[in-house]
Amino acid sequence: MSAQRIEIFLSESEIARLEQVVARHCRRFWRESVPGEIEKLTCLVQRRYTERLIEDVEKTFIGNPSLMVIVSDIAASIPAVAEDAASALPVEDAPPPNALERWFSRDRLSTDELYEDLDDSLRVQPNYLLTVVLSALIAALGMNSGQTAVVIGAMVIAPLLGPTMALALAATLGDGRLGARAAGTLGIGALLAIGAGALVGSLATIHPEIAELSNRTVVNAADVVLALACGMAGVLAFSRGGSLSLVGVMIAVALVPPLAACGVFLALADFGRAAGAIHLFAINLVSVNVVGIGTFLMQGLPPKSWRMTAGILLIWLALLLALASLLLGPFAFDVLGWAR
Image (tube, rainbow, N blue to C red; front, side, top):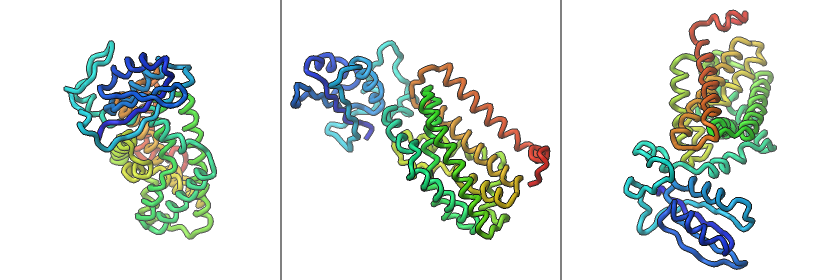
């Protein structure tokens, strides 16, 4: 069901103003008193209005120490909270959303919920570091033995997916602090994954011609299309509340396996194949960010500055074109004196 329950706690002196704010965003709400001269307003809100309701409440009552907002999903209500053009509420100083905008935004999580979902995955804690190392070890060993199911297991763990999604979200919203956190966490994770792959390459007997391993060193045009399509599918699933592990399987654009393969070939001093693996990782990473920004914008996430968001998107597109240009021929690696 595309509706949420929002509980807002506020001092009694402000509750009348709060009711006026809430009435602009939902049609069903009720009020009750709680201890400590606090009033509670409970609202049933169509999901597409959650974000604008929270923003309106924060803007109107910012600095009020009694303010608290709790958002939760509801499974059902009688009567149902309608989600159609007839139930649309007007937006002040803005045209009503068209059918396409309503369709893309109806099930999207609010920006606050997206931040909350990503917060844990951006903390460089022992759990994150260990998860990256384990997923890279699993991926490297699975590729070396040709076991696709084992490689998929590394994708289920998906430790780098959270920082990647956060990069796209930060670019969309123009949040430099979130972007810096995401880039730092992703960089640390990528280096650890390469190191774990190098450990496997140093200690295990490597079979470099096995398809699962060698395929992570070659990029073709189909891989770019696959990265864009699967990246968009993953962002859509994530923005609608899918867990990062499930999105990691859906996205099918593996981030850890190419890094692990790079580490393996670095340990073998096969720099050409190591460069190919980094190329694949970079294509996947940039593709997810390009379609991630586009998908978040399509779903109605509000940028702080359209000029900034557009500039960042153009940079990602330029990087994607530069990486895709390397597919024109093997000369891109031959100029460095490396042979595939």
